[in-house]
Length: 215
Image (cartoon, rainbow, N blue to C red; front, side, top):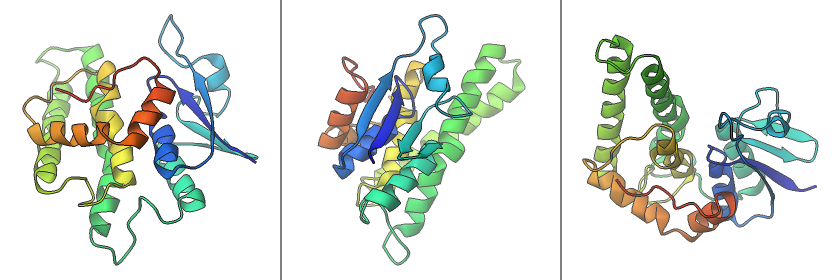
């Protein structure tokens, strides 16, 4: 039985490749390029899971979607207690919060802003203005958090960071935004970019691509 990560180029599935590299566990990487006409997943990727979206992993007969679920499955099955905080550990509640903030709030809001801009990018679009206000608030929260600690859960790098970084980096290919007003976020991304696990993962998942770690 071999853990297989099905990675769609320029997608959230980079998180799963990164997790496997940080854990130094054996896995098979299958990479799929986006279609040239609409930049969506190719038919063979969509056939992997009923939702037809990234990420997808398989482990024997198990096929699993949703990056948060995949990260938890790999951590509990192969992690050996690494990259997680448990009840009683300092920063446990912070770990839980930022782990779920990543997809529950941060990525969802970036996606909402992107979708609303496509409908009507003008100031008359009241829902867009509300979404932008929420997005700015999130960046301020992240900036404040990272002014106090090196990683989202505190002193230690954890899976909460793995869940969060895509929305601040590769997602900017789809929804550009400027981080120059947030020096602590930028310093955090430089720490991430210096990690061997991140470098290996991005080289494998996105060959020839320079991660968007700057402003």
